[in-house]
Image (cartoon, rainbow, N blue to C red):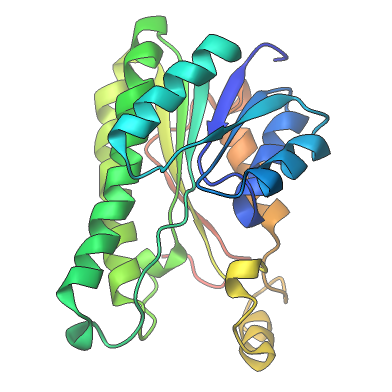
Length: 244
């Protein structure tokens, strides 16, 4: 698969960086997208031996994403796998107390980033009769947790879009799936109390919280030829803590 090209939005750190590494291990040439921190993205690219390139763009901006995909395809080749992983900030607190503007920003940002990506890569995939699209959702879209109303709502909408898109693009040989991580050790979760992490681990059948590589490996599989019969799926990646 040395000639296959994958694009990962938000690929410079955490789960995104692990996805980049997993795809490179599968033989993909990887376009590593970042919003601002090109230095960190270049470091990730170095970890995979320069097997790709870094592309800066705001994943929520349709114009920037379209231009990025054109640049990726001009430099690396057709995008055969696209991963929506860009982290969209969300407010926390009781849903009924959250400012609507902040909730709307999360909803529009999450769905906007996914729509921008599939609108840019979809036509080429359909024309070539082959493609892989993976969206990084969250177990919080189905497993309720206080304070995460905006995040849960946006990821639930993402899950629905994935299901519909898998039906629309399936006849053209394009698979579309969502992975739903539980608690994963990244810089984004570093502020959470260690006591809480230990409690989550205690209630997890595998008795630990997730690591970025736990997610990256599954996403790489879904982008591979081995997953050609898998589409329209919501795949919990949480060590078995819930199976909803």
